[in-house]
Image (tube, rainbow, N blue to C red; front, side, top):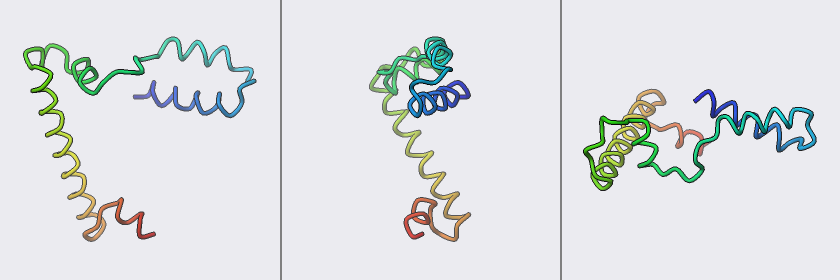
Length: 96
C-alpha cells in the first residue's frame, strides 16, 4: 500500500512537471513497483489469498468477493450512521 501511495505521489509530481530533474528516478521507481494494469478483482484476490482459495472456481470466488464487499459497505454505513447522527459520510458531504 505504501508503494502505491508513493507511486501516486510520483505520478502527480511527474505529471505536474514533465521536465523534472527527478524524471529518471521516477521511471526507475515505476519499473520496480509496477503491477499489471489490467489485473482483475479475481486475479488480485487470488494473488493476495494464495493457496487458501486455490480450490474455488472463479464463479464461487466472485460470489464471495461480492458478498464480502456488500458486508463491508453495510458495516461502514452503519458505523458512519452511528458516528454522524443517522447519516453516512457520503450523505453528510452532499448536504454540505
